[in-house]
Length: 403
Image 1 (cartoon, rainbow, N blue to C red):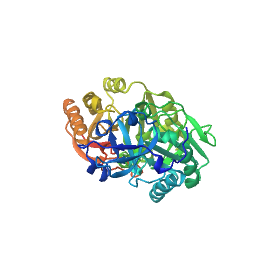
Image 2: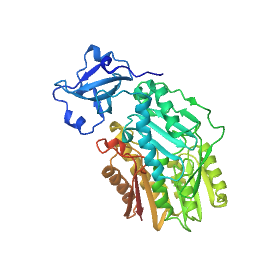
Image 3: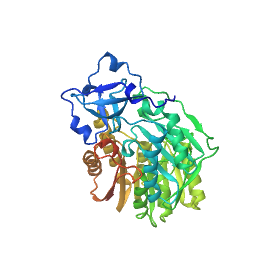
Image 4: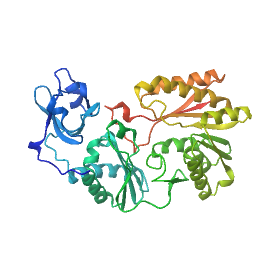
């Protein structure tokens, strides 16, 4: 879908209810929920993805917003300027700001280029893999402005290929399709090799999870690699070898990767092969909980164990169930850690805050009969900037314990 920039005067207007917190919006809150707005028949009829003007209850403009009446988040703040025109030039300005940060941080063009609200582009994820960018348009307004976005993206970055990945959970919540597409150029015909922390990762941009690789753990991979020299490592929920390959690059004696996806483990093995470390690599394919129990039965011990599961608590409604799952992971993983070894437990669930997640991990470790020192608390790298007014943007947590 495409949309041209409409004249500001022709835009619809949304108005806050008298008790809505206009001050929070003025201070940077990016979302406006359905219960905060006057939703009359005209407002409810606005087409998803439409650009509108947001006003407070006294009809004073607050800014330019993207609208989706079918979502709980009806309005997403795009610009504090209520007369902003959302066109190719507007996207280019935002993309240029984001690019300047990444180019300062990283030597090569492999990073998260746009981290949604953290980069002022709500609902939009863009990961860059050299000459190819993968877009996740997780909000209706991005879908309706894909043409302008793509034009700006190729102009600012110079990439030749732009892919649309429609697998994001947000698209379902926004009522959007699940159709992947090639927007510019061509999709790569093979996985792309990405160098991080001295390790080589194989990113499948068309058949892998999300955009093909998780850049967010880069800094945590680097920290954990410092603990890995000359020891045996277990990387559970490894995907394409995230922590395991970083550990091998850090001098681990051996790394065992566990994942439910045989395809992901094949990519991990290829990464190890390209690093010249295949003789120190092994894989176990299967359910992570089952594999942890099996390793206990086998009497296995590792000096370094990492568990980096998918989001067990993707929403507030799932928080309690998710925290119990994190506790179980900790309880099953801790007995596999050798005395004075290290256990790394991660969560990418925004609904499980750091305090709750830490508590669940400590309960699991305690139930296993182990005692822990907390050495390090990690978060996503700087290419995943956190918007302070939006807790959800700081979703990633990585806890490093010594048992």
